[in-house]
Image 1 (tube, rainbow, N blue to C red):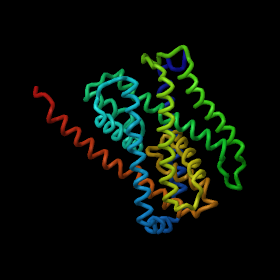
Image 2: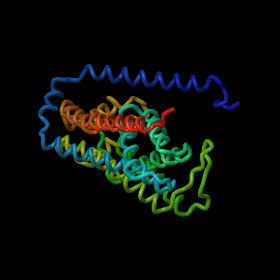
Image 3: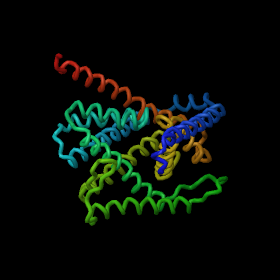
Image 4: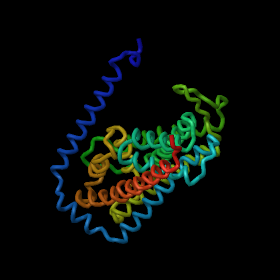
Length: 314
């Protein structure tokens, strides 16, 4: 009997996940008690308006670019929803995904909103899958290049050196290139996963996926770099952000709350005072997470109100 066929397995898997999340949260709370929050508050207050404005523009550009990810799915599935509607659904889903996790944002909101717009579940699943794939393909390519060519200079007291990151970078880069090769030369063009048929995109679409996703990750890192006011070289900021992104996914903490900050502090506090690092990251959270979430909530409310007004009367 397979593990997945045993009735206790899903519950055990869920219990382990919850226990791991509780442990992570407990460690983050313990760490938070050691932080000089007065220094952090002062660092936030000292951020120049010009810096906040530039970082805000970059955060807006990132959300705008990410809102185009579902347009790739639109071309891939050939559904006929207008571009503004697709981008609106993508923006709402992404903002809620960032703050509450993929099941709430990336999945639930897409199914609810797209189904109301007339898409069937199979089409929504293909759009969702391609969007998620686009995001992480760009990650693989960019992280592979950065870790291989310009590996992060790790803190002196770390036992691991940069060679480990270089090996990881080579593996990530190989994975991204393998996807391109599959899209270009694989004779088998489709697979069935959990009852859903997935068809390999053409090489041009695969290149577009890599390009827009890589650009998005770079813009996100640029926003953090601006908020740090050039105290850390951009390639290092990009490397740490990429590491923090995976750490947030592994820990399953909503919005990666505390995880992003902990990774930056662990890897860069030997170069920049902890208070300044946390001040910049809190500014980043406000601009990239909280601000777009408020905008997405208002947009979603408007969509719901419009849907109710046009709902047929029973």
